[in-house]
Amino acid sequence: MDIEHCPLCYSKCTSSESEWGTYINCDSGHQFTIHESVAYGDKKDVIRRYNLISEILLGTPFKVVNMMREKWKFFYAENEIGFDIQDPTKVNIANNMQNYPFSFSDKMDRIMLNLSKQYPNPHDLFVWEEKNARLMFCEAELPDEVRLEERAVILLLKELGYVKHDNDKNMYSISASGWSRLSVLHKKEQAMNQGFIAMRFGSETQSIRETFRDAIRQCNYAVSIIDEKEHNNQIVPEIFSEISKSKFIVVDISFPNYGAYYEAGYAQGLGKEVIVCCKKSVFDGKESISRPHFDISQKAMIIWDNEEELVQKLVRRIDATVGKNTVI
Image (cartoon, rainbow, N blue to C red; front, side, top):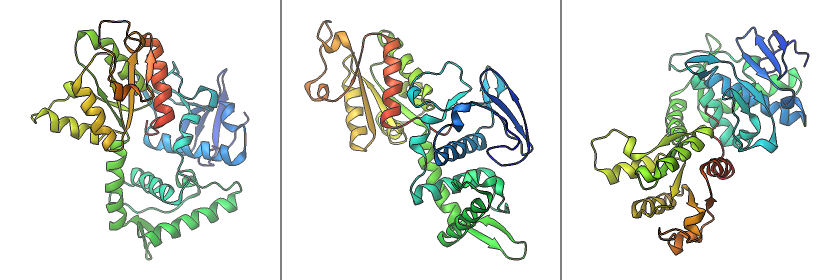
């Protein structure tokens, strides 16, 4: 691709070609490699992809691999959603699209979160610049239209009471109402970053535990396993607390465990997504271990033969039911 201006902030940039894509280094500090697939398709969809890329780079400019800072590589492939990408620096934007803020309220909330990352202190003052259009999820194509859309977003945030204007300095800051809203959003954001594992713990289930951990991390979520958490509380309230903070729960019923059944029911009652997994030989009754209880065996679950199949199926199921985490 022939790129003279950064597709994220419109500033001048230098670019160089590689076998995989185009490396971009712009005057505003963006450094990343982008595959030509990102720019293919409907113009509005392409703009939305760039908006998401800008948001990712705002939160995490680099990927840390083996204690080294590596630059992100972005591509778009709908047929690879849910599949494991061996290179941890590669990000398939197709995975992130289902979490794009299409509604008005979702868009305003995401803009506020982006503002708080740029200006984390209550006394921070800022001006609105064209380079921030991506972080405001503007979708206009022409520069004049982008500026009009930015202005409209500013007025909406003011009407909501989330930002205030300093007339003397002609600058903006996040208001008290804005910080109050952000405190709620940050709690929700924390809950979106975690998946809980419910299962029997022991040497016979260690490989299943590690497979669950691998799949959850591939979807960009933190992993919560109660026997790995340091605490001084009673165990049941602590389990309930971890489940309440989780976006979803992954349950193994290959090895009977009444606690795991109980935790799955509690999560279901909270409206959490519950993903049940069972080894095929157990599900078919071919092992001495008792088959899953009738009530839970009616639920659509992941039936697997080996750990390699389990991790692939679980990644796809997480992506299809809750979506991959966009906060990398």
